[in-house]
Image (cartoon, rainbow, N blue to C red; front, side, top):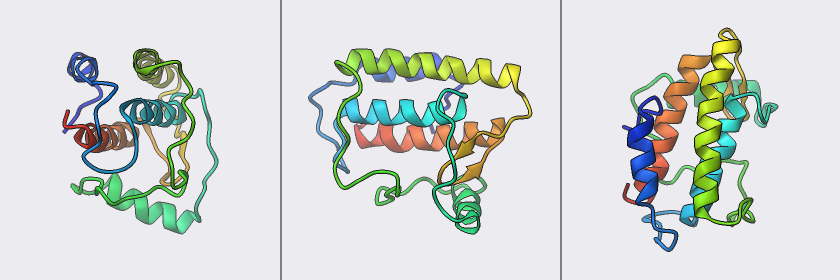
Length: 150
């Protein structure tokens, strides 16, 4: 399991990610995956606040499965936020996307140092506190790192 609090380990894995790698599952390229992780971290660090995209009852069920269980995010899980094809790139290349992800993860730390009781909204899981976001990010990073054999 990836631990987003172990930044050196994450950085080392990202540094060996080849921009031409093919996913073991899904349609994302390495850059799509990193940009996707970045956007999700931005949901939790105050940089890209979200509204709930599913009914509250459904969000609570998803939260129980994803955050409050030992289950991993399954390879077949498809978020309702994404279309059938990956979106256009936000950054010029994988290296820039990785740097932006590193910045967003650092901003996550600063955000919760300044707002320890906040519960930023995950559009699928609902409001999450700091510890819940850590669990979610750990599982989400693990899921996508497995996508590229990291």
